[in-house]
Image (tube, rainbow, N blue to C red):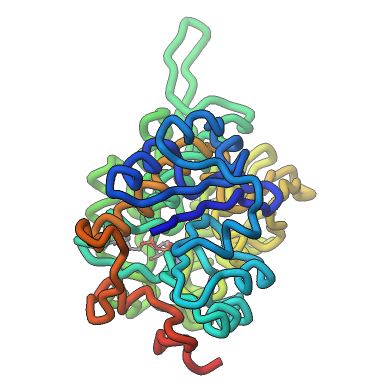
Length: 376
Ligand code: NAD
């Protein structure tokens, strides 16, 4: 089986779908691994490192995509490259299936089987393949260190002969994977941390990390079977905003991570709420790419409001730590392949009845097969 990893081409993308150590794992399984020359540069890996791991360095990207049995990517492929893949071959990586339907249709038309990283089921066994979690974890960390680096003050309390400095106040909105890591990181830096999530089950997790859970009564919300938040009604969103306004006004750093799977992120911080914040405060909007949780966020940019609040809307913050982000992404990829690998035939057999495959397979044998995406 020939596995190919192209260089990511989107501006700002620093990650690579396979790092040398992960390539070596695939080679050990008996796979042939090809990697586009320079693919690992952004993440700190030279072609020579991949060659030493047993991979071949490829310069003809189009030919390699056309001959590969399995293409591993970080971000969604361009349509003209999807068309290069041979019928019956496989592709995996982030595919943004909610927004990029035409690409899913192109994969189906090309006869490619796609295993979409966003749709890996949230089960214990599939956790090791879950790209969303591994990347969100790093994004939560980067959000805090980015905010700390830009803040006009320090995070920890300091008692010095020159006086006592109070700890910075940090508010984390949305306590999923990224939010939990943000809480832990802000606590390690000495901040005083508060957090809120619409899923009441996270209250205990927030407390166990030494942070305070902000109580806002917005009525029944709950979560989906996969652990995702349900969408709020406009009335519930308003109740939440009212409950958070005071907390935000007293904070030095606000980090928003609130996402609703497959839907636009809710606006939780309005201009009015931001106008109540102190000049020099920092907001990091981790939902920026999906529309943002903050009114005034511009994806991939930093903006400063009239009252001096800095809003950071960089998308995919994990890109700022590409070595570790790629290491974890690649481990997720290899864990998926290894889990199903047929050691005798040295191939990736498609177990169509397996729960993980059923959960993440978008296209197969010329059709869109995932029931959620069958009807446009
Ligand atoms: P996510 O990225 O979809 O959302 C981030 C957080 O925002 C979630 O906690 C969500 O509840 C919250 N949110 C949504 N709307 C909100 C609002 N209006 N106000 C405040 N918060 C809001 O979620 P995620 O980080 O991917 O994970 C969600 C849950 O799934 C977590 O409990 C996580 O531990 C669990 N999980 C389980 C597995 C597994 O079992 N394999 C894998 C990954 C995540």
